[in-house]
Each structure stands twice: as structure tokens, then as C-alpha cells.
Amino acid sequence: MTNSSLGSAIRRYRKVAGLTQAELGEKTGFDPKTISRFETGTYTPSVEALSTFSEALGIKLKAFFADEDDEDEQRAYLFGVIHKAPSQDLGKLIAAVDLALSKP
Image (cartoon, rainbow, N blue to C red; front, side, top):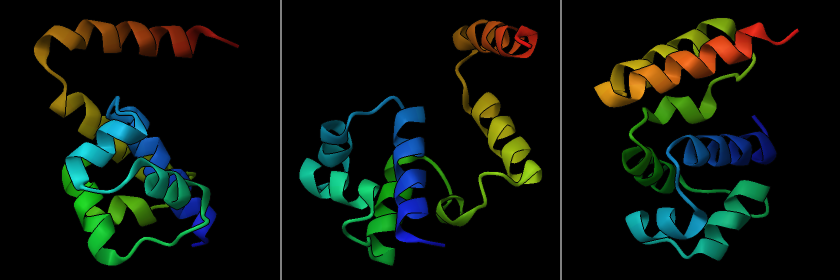
């Protein structure tokens, strides 16, 4: 795994959580500039930093190292999102999935 793919994973899970770099920084104690550098691959986060991010983002540490093109990983990720979603958001998720699957 390259620094850029690790950074992309951090960015992807941060965005899925609906957080800005500043908000993730508040939750983790990292400066937003440092988070930006992790996401761009300029800095490589330590295992401890990744552990802190995984706790703040509500994901397993191994998610940062999963192949985003692996179909099983993608399905597991989607099931996790659905499972954790508040009941009032399930309708939105269904609508989003229907919309995404209806596009050619």
C-alpha cells in the first residue's frame, strides 16, 4: 500500500463520516494541516495515529489497508454503513442506492 492510497482511505472514511479535516482534528487532536498532509501522502501516519482515526471515524483499523476495489470489502463496508445508520436515515440510503443503480 502506498502513502497516497492510505491517504485516500483516510479522506474517504472522513468524508463518509461527514467530517471536515478541522472536525476530524477536533476529535483526534491532530492539526487540520497534518490531516491534510496525511490525506495527500506528504506525511505517513503512525499506527497509533491510524488507530486514533479509526476510533474517531467508527471503523476498524484494517479498513485503512483494504483494497477499495475488492468487491467483498466494498460489500462489507456498505453493510456496515447500513447497519450503523439511524432508522430515520434508512429511507435516504435506499433512495441514494436506487438513484445510483438507475444510472447507466
